[in-house]
Image 1 (spheres, rainbow, N blue to C red):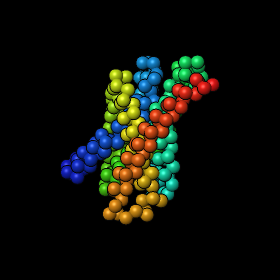
Image 2: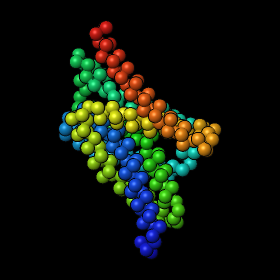
Image 3: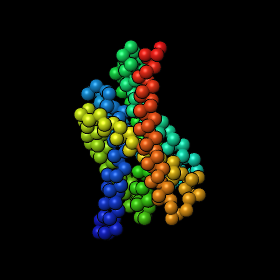
Image 4: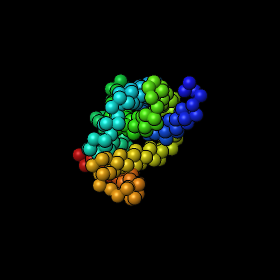
Length: 240
């Protein structure tokens, strides 16, 4: 029986650790996208956002290994994640309304948040599913399927609890928003550098250093552009 196999339980522990490390990314996206929603809609934003994240992981699970080896997929996804993160830093300045915050109807606001979460999670769920699949592929069916399902199931409470905690922190400490954006920029930079088109040209001895450097550049880029964009959006109404 698989329950008597120590390697199976080692794989379970590895998957839990992977989820702890990588589910936080999805939680940050959900928290940043939902932080301006009314309390009741915020709960729905977390629930639906988590559902989107898990649903995307289920979809990706079937073809993830092939997808992540195709050139340009990570490159395009990382650039898209950078753009989304910069927009997440300044949602209150966008849209209509004389106060600069955009008087958006609650339902539209909620679904706009879900759309942002879906786009961002489409990028970030790739690495999570790939990592879990790499652990599960050591086993034959149906054990590998059981491990994949277990990994997805563990993600659900981690994402929901993580998103709720991050939202609470952003309300008390606005700097958390910028820290979360820097984290997403870090992930985006690393995703771009790990695209096969770029990674294939790197010396294996220095590849890790290049990935970390690209991640740091991504974090700094998001914060710098976010600050400039926020300043420009605040000045635009005065100049109109």
